[in-house]
Picture (cartoon, rainbow, N blue to C red):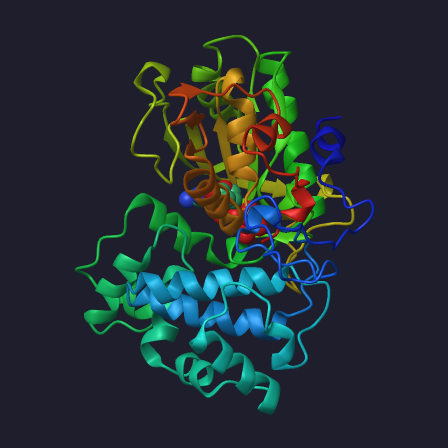
Length: 399
Ligand code: DCT
Ligand code: MG
């Protein structure tokens, strides 16, 4: 079935925590002993990171700090804390003393000071201060609504609004369609989606897609492909080998979901992908494939083991956020690699390509600036090979 196909690579069969040696990029100096410890790469795409995080006490603290910098639009330290968290997530064991951080990359003075505090007293004064800060709490609350980004949250905060009821009672605030749905389904979509629910949604979409075109291909991407048990949404690639057919496939699927009465919200973005316009020197964050951001109604009877719903909720269904993206088949490998994530893994793949290989990678293509040519790929393995990277399985990309 589509699910076993999608998960084949995603299932952690044997958890490998070995780290890649960075010998090809930064050979050890002649003087270092032949038995020198393997170094941890500064690039997430040269580390193997499973969902098992042995350093959550540190990484949770770093995430709060990164988010706080993000709210204040201070990019450097924000990225530094995200990188540091990512390095610690890749470690096979818990860091229990500062000595253990000595050979690790991406840990600056500020990061180490926070770690030292956490090791000594179990909490960080700076993190506690942020967590109790009214502005942080409010922005965190507002951005938890589907359709509300940091900009809108900030605007509302500056107007003195502090709670959802403040927003909903303010007559001068005009919510867009996305935010309306965000508030309407807040309880459901702020609740995590289980793997069983993701599988059930895949079955629904697979059936719909195959009824439209029997050769439809559905693949689970995002966190669930990386082996996560829970997610904030479910991400799928859906396409067909028939050239050009992918351009209308998503709107056909959405029509049918609507017909079935399970389409609670949809935002469709048609394809703006134009192969003749590559190489684009703006290798952007968002890709140009046709995509849609949906909220779907999922019936409990379709979920093995039942819904992940609140206690006392007897509706028998829940709303779930679903993203569908539809690349042309010859772009499939790039889209799959990009949409599998994690965000940090993607960031470092691109950074590695640019800085170490003089190549540009995005969700559409890989361009070699030295040879001035695009490098074709049918599978993710092809892309790793072009980049001269050891293949990293999806379940090892939880950077
Ligand atoms: N992605 C990306 N750049 C973006 C947005 C997304 O590279 N600007 C990729 C990375 C992950 C993937 O798309 C899906 O995005 P999310 O659903 O936000 O992430 P996730 O890893 O699936 O996390 P979650 O389990 O919470 O859904
Ligand atoms: Mg996701």
